[in-house]
Image (tube, rainbow, N blue to C red; front, side, top):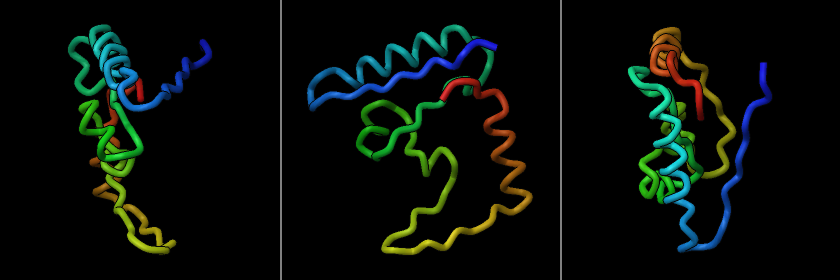
Length: 94
């Protein structure tokens, strides 16, 4: 199995990060014709999600957003686990 390709894209405002990400995502999706949601773009902020047409990590994994200093974690129910498995079935690139 080949080593996974990893890329960290950084830079200040207006340095075309969103453009680079959208070009990479488009290229990856082109190679997976017919595979629904083969590529999922997860980002750390809502602004980045909006700019890139992606999802925040919390949205993508359907995690509740806790405000304050809460360290309470809720276990996923069997039905929710099944839904997540189905929605991530064909994803091969994050």
